[in-house]
Amino acid sequence: MTRKQTAFMSPRRIAVTGAIPWDGSDLAQHFCGAIGEAIVEHRAIVVTRGGMASSRPRARKNLLRPIDEFVVRGAKAMTTTLGIATEDAIETLVGEGRDGRELFQVGKLRSIRGRSYEAERFRFVDLVDGVIGICGRGGTRQSLILGLATDRPILPVPAFGGGSLEVCNDHQHDVATRLGIDVADAKRWQQTPKDEPAATALARHMVGRLLGAMVRRCFIVMPFHHAHSALYDFVIAPAVEGLGDEPIRLDRMAVPGDVGQQIATGIQLADYVIVVLDGMRPNVLYELGLAHGQGKPTILLNQSGSLGSDADAMPFDLALQQRLEYAAVDATLPTRLQEAIQKVFRRRRASD
Image 1 (cartoon, rainbow, N blue to C red):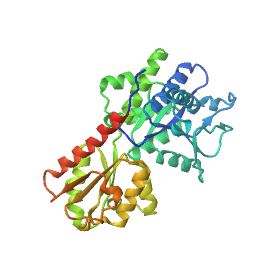
Image 2 (image 1 turned 90 degrees about the horizontal axis):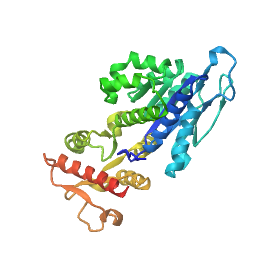
Image 3 (image 1 turned 135 degrees about the vertical axis):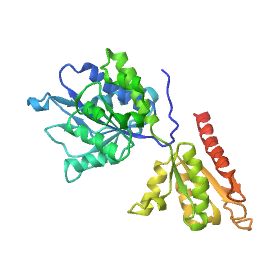
Image 4 (image 1 turned 90 degrees about the vertical axis):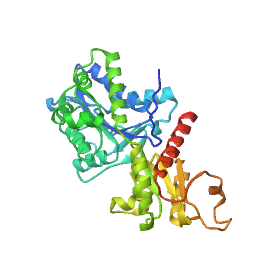
C-alpha cells in the first residue's frame, strides 16, 4: 500500500458526521470505514461526536445509524497498520447523549457540552479544519452548512443520498471550486460505488481532495510596530501567500479574547513559524521558545545590525541557528524568504 503524506506539519482535524440506513448498508459501512482509513493514512485526525446506536431502533424515524463507529473502526485499523497511537489519530468530542443513543469515547477526549444540541454542533465544527458528511439528515446538513459558512472545506458525499446529497446539490459550485474537482469528478462522486474496492478508491480520492483544499498555516512572530509594517506587508505576507500558504498575524486579525491563549493556539496549529528577531524583544523570544517547545519549524529573520553590537547579546541557542539577514526591504527579500520556507519543507520530507 502506498502511503501518501501531506505537506502539513500540524495534523489537520477532520470532522465526520452522518448516518446511514440500518438495512442494506454493507457497502455504505465499508465506505465509511475507508474514509477513516484514508484520513489517518494522510496523517490527519478523525474527529467524531461518538454517536453510536447500541441496538436496532424500533421507531421508524430512527432507522438511520450514525456513521461514527464505522469511520472509527477504519481509522483504528489504519493506526495499527502504521503503528500510530489511537490518541494521535482519533478524537471524540464528548457531548450529551440523545435519542436513546449510547455514545462511545475513542482516542483523545474533549468535552463540548453546551446549553443546546445546536450549540454543541457549532462547537464541533468550530474545532476542526474540514467536515465530511455522509448521508444523514438535518444535523448533517447543519454541520456541513456551518463548515461552509465559516470558510472550512466541506465534503458532502452525494453517493449515498440523504442530507449530504442535498447540500452537495444546493452548493455544488462552491464545493467543486473549493475542492478543485472537475465535471468528471463530480459525476463520479454522484454514483454509488459498485463494490468494496470501488468504495475504497472513492473514499481515498475524496479525502485526498479535501486535504488538498487546505493550505499550510504560517504563524508570524514579530514586533507589532509601524516600523515593521513594510517588512510584513511587502515581504512576509507576499512571500507566504505566494506559496499558497496562509500568514497568521494576530494584531491584524482583531480577534477578541485572551491574547496569550491565542498565541499558544496559533503556534500549536501552525505548520511553521516566521520570527523577526529585530531588537531581541522579550515577547518575541518567548513566542519563539513556545514554537521550539512544540517542535515547530522556525525561520529566523533579522535586519543587519538590529541585534545589538554586544557579542553576548545573542543567546547561545540562537547563535547556533541559521538566520535570514537582510540590509533593507527590497525586491529580492520575498524570494529569499520563499527559498528559506521551501528549504524547511524539503528537509522535512527528506527526514520522513
